[in-house]
Length: 214
Image 1 (tube, rainbow, N blue to C red):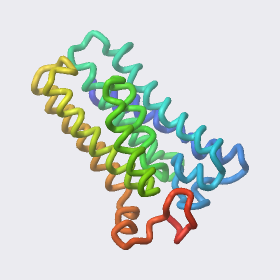
Image 2: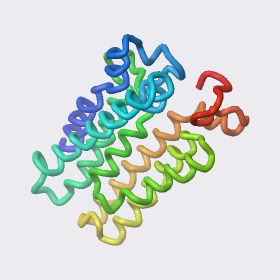
Image 3: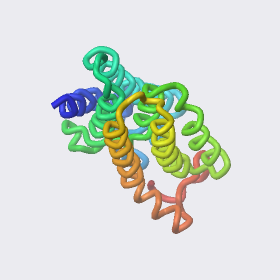
Image 4: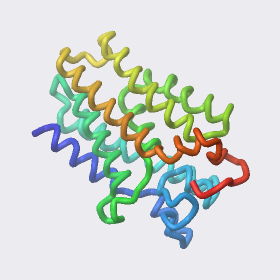
């Protein structure tokens, strides 16, 4: 029951569609512009750096808030509170990606994943951050950085967990690994069109001339 509650809590927080709200502040529907995605990358491309930063910050914060509410307030006394925090992060990602009131058309969940990384422990931040920034800077493909960051976080959680970082029993750690695997798989699935374009050589580079609608 705790897991379902945490998924619901996360989903409710995830429903705060920052990109959509920032778009409305600029008198546009972000879902009808650029790639049609409500995430921070499309907000940046369509509305500029300020809107992109606002969208990114909002998407990170909503996940952090959901996870900390679960881990530090509602279930703080449970041994497996870190696992429940991951469920809240999964719920926030689902709410962000599939908001019911916007016909389930949201973002791709990478900024939300960033919020989950931060709220899972600051020690976990540097490696996924580097996995995102370095490929993105070198290739100018945001999608490459996003895919690698999600995969790196999955591997890092396993390593950190096996080193005793989450201070949970083995069965809880295995369940956590499964939840984070689902998050990684969801991120890759949401980027399936980007992957196709990368393989075809016509993915849009960040800051470059647009090749086609992404």
